[in-house]
Length: 419
Image (tube, rainbow, N blue to C red; front, side):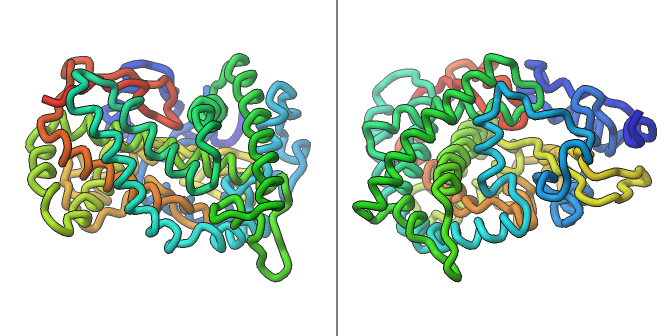
């Protein structure tokens, strides 16, 4: 038995339980108060629930997203890679999210040359036009699914336009992404592995074609910018470029879709809060109000509730010795409701300030796409409040269906109507 397994209390998180997925917060509150650090025997890892502990690990360079840049699998005591997900593992080892310095430093510096704040800010008017076009058809449509009709199209369209993916291929992006991200859940099935493998292959084939086209005929898009990005004579390899684009397409809309739908569900369940935003929607220069509201909604119901870090050096955590290769799960959703960090954390306060939520991470792995996700969420909320002020849930008792994942937790469907 490992040291953490022997020294810590054991708790098995019910990650596939429907009731927990619908509302994990009562259990997280109990764990945070009574068992803030525990060992989950199903996940085989230490789990942290408090904001201070999670923040400390995220900033501690003795923890990372990968350990294979320092150690072999034999040294870590890890099993051989699963051949059923060889393409997914190759993709995962080659992009920014699961890299560590010096590779992470190199990739991030090259990405920042192309993914500039100016480029993100320039998207605001285009985002507003996309939202207006979507909403024109929804007001008179009767009941509709907010996920497929409103939340999904915008971020997929925006990241596809930003990268330069032609419209004819965009209908593949959401299904490919949904297949790939299933392997970030702790207990994927063989069917999940098969789907993810095929999605990585299909995604890569499309991007390889687009990269070749941009090398020959540059355009004003992010694929071209990544092809041309260079710092001190260094450029992305073709495989790094392809895998980075897949990551951007995945990460560029999963959190946005789930954050918006969970946020609207929260607001419609607390009607005075929705009405307060509606009252601000037509006020000039009201985007700041919606930006603060977006931050609070991302804290209140976290779309990416659990991340992990891997121990890179021998250390002691809460008196328990950990060795390289040990895994630690960080319950962002719990840290975002920690009363030691937030006043009245179970209350929705749309003007909460400061709001040091953990949703986009901390440290060197802080989300590169956070500015775009924030802008999309604020603009989407404002446009929805302007166009459909009387929006309501079709069935308040059973308003939506969840996808079944907890690492990436979101609604598969949310039925609403205009009034």
